[in-house]
Length: 411
Image (cartoon, rainbow, N blue to C red):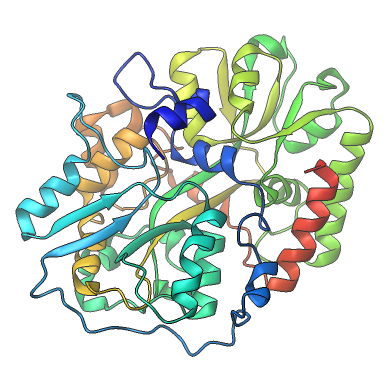
């Protein structure tokens, strides 16, 4: 998506007047654009297009690796999801990688929505064809689906010494890719409670229960349209583990949210447009994404956040190598480069999401001390211990759970 088109569709993404950083980043663009698990190539389209159901494939399929002769890697990523330096130069870390290795990175910002991207590449992947991409970056639930389908390649640990050594413990063993055999995280995304201190006018907010039940907040609470975030935070508030919940637990969490909807407690379910309402005070408090809050807080002292005692939901965007990619070794070298602390810090200093690299904090402090001290960018041990992932879902569960949530939100 060209920048002018992104600005037209999502005005909150327009560049800030200070520092040149997009005032709201890639995650906001995704959440604003996404229409849920069934839009543009969702689960129902799999069987309709003759694509095998997840779990029935034979595993990743390699191609002849042309990395030694073709010094290139084709990398597909999201808009505004890589570093830009203070002079406005785009992706200097990619330039540093190319200078060191002689590998040219053909960088394309052509992922605007997980479902849309899945719809774009699935015909080629299902047919066992090269997508023209050596490296892609997708959110954890789609990464899980691609792994289940056998459409991505197993990584070679010999080419990933930095990634293995420096990957933060909280990201090492997702249930959808145990031991990170197929993927490595690009960034983490924290889900927290954000609030406008002026709008709260003395009301204390410490938990999801406060959002759902405090009558002083009636009509001024926001929840997210993203099921995993809103339901996951509610499950935590109920004392349930989002990594191990049952269908009954899920239904109980939905019932809690439905009750708040019925009594007018929740103003609305939002994409990233909550940011405007929160800044103006139309929302006094809401479920929010940490990277947004970091940037909102820098521009508006009334905006702040809390991490509930019950914990927070953490998700990831992940680097994977599609089947039949021509330059697998080059792609693995690029993954490994971003697990060196210095490039990892340069990336985090610009985009402000969770750095998944141990050692990144020290390098980040040299660039931006405030960012290095922010637990939404570099989690402390206490915050990491309170971080929980929403468990991976079977196709049947995903269809049922997303359907129920869509009915609740009116999506």
